[in-house]
Structures are given as structure tokens and as C-alpha cells.
Length: 238
Image 1 (cartoon, rainbow, N blue to C red):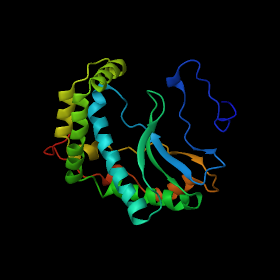
Image 2: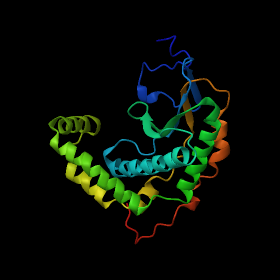
Image 3: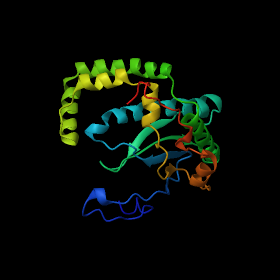
Image 4: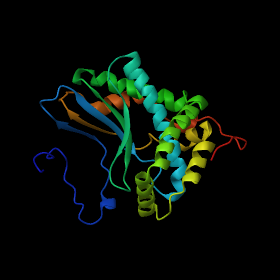
């Protein structure tokens, strides 16, 4: 284990895992036999996993789906640089990093990271999530809801995990109501600040000779919340 993960800086976690500092930066795990490189671009979680943040976290999930959908179109459909784009999270309970990633050839990493950053700048500042996409996502989620209701194992697992993590009983109807009431304004408002934290880029696979964080910073531009659409008191949002 020590040999395999020797590229990571050691940290003392003997006292409390929540006290481990987040040290942003770039980390690469070299796998000589691989021809491609897996890249993950990560940011500190915006809304902690707490009962009072459940709706905000649902908005973030929609926002991340919007990112993934458009990044896939830009990287795969338009440029043919990758096969797919994923969204995911890393880290312990109270120190989660959210992000997205893909797999690319080493020689295309510069193009991939540049295009990711430029696309995200547009999605964050001007090309916001649409009502059509929100409705499409909600209707597609109905299939998962049906599967959940028909599975004793999934329902039991959700009850246990929700009580263990939050100390509350899982309320399916309340969760469904949140999804039904969510608006475009909700998603935009609650995703502000998603990219405000320091970026980390984790890679594994084939080696490369480029500073990906530098490439990201040179292409991401201004993500200031000053361009956020004005949300009036009459807007339907939380």
C-alpha cells in the first residue's frame, strides 16, 4: 500500500478525519501500461450534507447534470475528444469534493481541460439551465422512483442511511415535493459559488507533461456572481 500510494503526501488522521486539511493541487498516479489518462476536476462541496440543506443539494444535482450534458456535447459530440463525461464526488463525510471528469489521450489533455473550462464559464455566466431540461430530468427520474418504491432492499437501505447520516427518517413524499417544485431560478441561485473554492485536478493512467491547473486557470475566465440573473421577490425560488 505504501509503495502504490507513495505519490500522495502523508497526513496524520489519527485524531479526527474532519480535522484533515484540504490541500488543493494536482496529483497524478502513473500507470505505465495505460495509453489514456483519467482526469477528475474537483471543488469543495458547496452545501454540506445536513437536513436543512437537502433542497439545495438537490439543486446542485440538477446543476451538475446540466454541466455534464453540455460538457459531453462540447467534448464528444462537437470535437470527438472523449467518449463520455461523468460527475462524482470524493472525500470523507464532511469534506466532500464535487466535480466532473473524463478520459483522454495524453496529447489531448490540454484541449480537453481548455474546452471544459471555457464551456463551464458560459454555462455558469450566461447559458443557464432551462425549464425544458429541468422537466426532462424530472420525468426521467420517475423511472428511478418507481424502481425505488418496488424495491424493499432500496427502501430499507435509504431509511437506514438517512437516519444514520442525518438522524431523521427518510420522507419520500417530501423529497418528491421538492423535486416537483424546483425551478430554474432555484438551481441558478443555489449553485452560485460552486466553483469559488480552490480547484484540484486528480489524474491517473498514462503520463503527461503539462500543468493542467495552469491550463484550467488560463481558460476558466471570470466566474463572478455579478452576472447572476436578478431574482426578484416574485420569482418562484427558495
